[in-house]
Length: 627
Image (cartoon, rainbow, N blue to C red; front, side, top):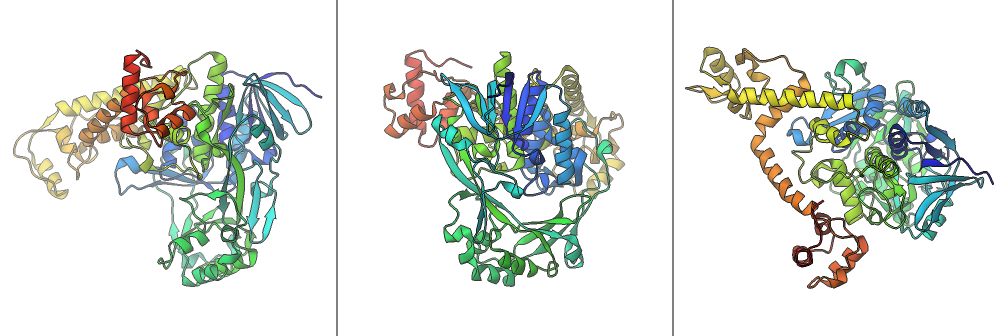
């Protein structure tokens, strides 16, 4: 048996979670080995060729603010960029970019290859080594042993994967790559509870057969906003490629209804639980029978390919049905299918087995991230990979773990949901899951999280730039609150033009900015001494002043939230000894072992009366100090 030189950290899987985990740990100075069944799967996009979108764009900017790679990589490889939801408030503005999926993977592979203390190995991991409830390394399919201090599992949709379309079923991972078939047995022997989930993808078609004239063209934004706070619009500007919008119709739906019995989703062939918020086209037709059409976006997969992705028409119907179904859509009548759509089943875990650090409670030094934790999406996976990588490295280096809570980031909301509540279906991040979303905007991710990443992946230089940006924002807000503008012909004309109430005496410029119809930029014409400031600074100034009252209310709620989060629960507490707790609460608390009162309060089956009884118990015994 070959026994490798011990590593600090081993990462199993090279998807979006695995890449972020490996890069984070290696950049913190540790030796890392990352294992892939195929090197072609590095940061692969087996489904939609885009990064970001509603709430997901928040995650990408948060990843960047903490020192991760996804934002930088998509800035290098995007082919179209748009800021979504601009007609709504800033809390839900979300950046989304179409990717050249091939370049995206190549760039991430190049980044991994250029880290000196990071080794990429093409080999299947089939066993984890556990000694005295601590991780000790892994075994590969060749029988080789790789010792390690910590291991991060990021298998994505490859673990015991099965692809299904119609009556066809193949034991493969996404895009026809090999699946990992033996690791599950080892994980179950270690006592890890496993689930079976399902996702899917639409067909890819050749551009030559598409009649774009029958569709609505969607171009990218003229003014590009980078995902990475370290980039500028000018530094990443490039020619963009259009996407196109079409729709299904009653003919499409009739074809689907006539063949629904041949769908493995409805025939009983698929056992895994699918995602609620990204249904297949056959599921849409069945669940929303009253709708005469559904949106279909035609998206290029890259700059140097003719393949197009049919967004909105994920399917696992048989090939003959797919051909007829897609041909019924306006503009796709003569489209040639290059790759057929399919569903994919895979193994994942019950994430309530994890600490908020993403370390397993029962196996010290074993971490997990991404779709293996029951989530869906590239962005959700990358965010978890980053946190798992940082915390695995921190454990070895003797640093405190990095735990982001719900009041600090969408990353905190997602991880708390997964490890506290668990999920019975693929978890997708949504803005509605975040209680404090006005505070957790995509535009201020650096202000929120870069200080939290300082000492992990954020160096002195970047932290210094962040402090300077914050100083400029604070100084300008202070200036505007102290600046009085008097009535004048210029101001009167400006207010009239924007249907804003006239003023008869002097008013603070900050108070004018608070008016819904006015902004910091609009009022610049009456601000003679306005300093020259970067756009990202003036954007924060405008939002901070305009939404000051709402922000103050959310900050008050966060303060109350923090009081519960900061009240620790002892590791050895026996909840059967806590008086007046209901039986369900005792069982859930003993099983999930929450870290603090706040987390305990969010466990399904623990009600406010149970929390009150817990607090009384802690007070009587002088337990549970502040964290």
